[in-house]
Image (tube, rainbow over all chains, first blue to last red; front, side):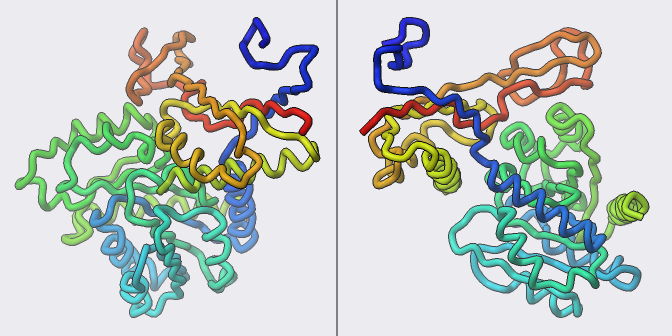
Length: 236
Length: 115
């Protein structure tokens, strides 16, 4: 055995150590980069919505579509373990939606997004929303190639979630604190949560809103509209 | 569940690499796993032990090296190891910091020998 590092590879052995240093998630990263190229080819601005189940992703998406749909062309990719229920809610608004049912997979990955995007009329889409699987853990590891990562945290989930699930907040450009109409009924210190999120992701943009009552929704809408305009200007 | 997908990625990475070494056997694989990479080393080990059967990793010893979360302060220049995910510089209190390590999930080395 090698005395330096205990690796079992010495000059007289028939073993050989290969220095590899390969990123285990590299296939997903390649695919995510490829997805990004597709989006840019069609000038599509893509937003990845992540959260635990029941945080209000679909409700936020529905409200967002109501604000944007007369001004922009929109497409949606819905991720769910089972059922087409969420997709159906969106389809009723006359918006092109592709549903990915993952069966048992706990996250969407870049190759699933790639397959899904080719079922949508990319040349007729300005905003593409991806609703990830409801899960505060696994989606954090998988880049999709989207331009904006958004995580929703709803008031009833509790103020300890950023500390308990830091990774998803670490990868989020925007954090939406949803269901603020319920603040009077829960021990949820909004300032503390904002501070906790900033510790994990100092440049996160944090928006407190209620998708149900509409309070604060205008901040979210103007934020993504600004991002969209910057994006289009950059591509022009 | 998540660990299973990581294992799939590991096996694919290794199958790609081993193509360049036909007839060789992998005796050891060393992984570098950041403590804040989002993967639980114990669960990954269990998943890997189960799914490596029939793969080039079947007979290989699996070693995980854990990497601390380390940040560098861009204001005072100092480095610090963090136990929790908290980007505040413990020396000057700045949030203008960057992660140096602790997020990675790498296949570091493969040890191979003639069959």
